[in-house]
Image (cartoon, rainbow, N blue to C red; front, side, top):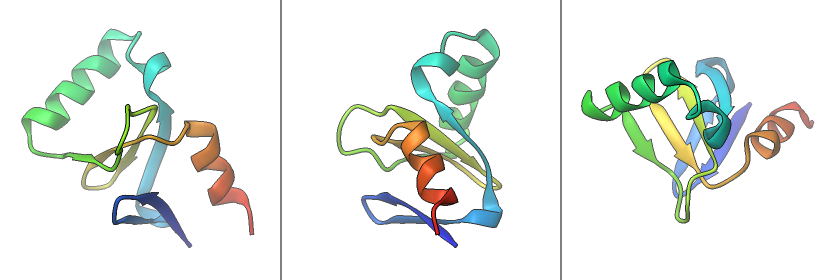
Length: 79
């Protein structure tokens, strides 16, 4: 199964480590550091055409998405 982040990004379900709400996660120091390091290391991909609301961590990158984390999780669990 694949998760579509739009903007040309399709992620394989087995590569996804986690889906997170951007606002909640950035309240924590460790999460902010993780995102800064992903960006500095060239691992950040922007799949958001608008203001990002969530981020998806995969085995090789971090993707910012305009969809909410709950919407992304729901799309993965629906058949």
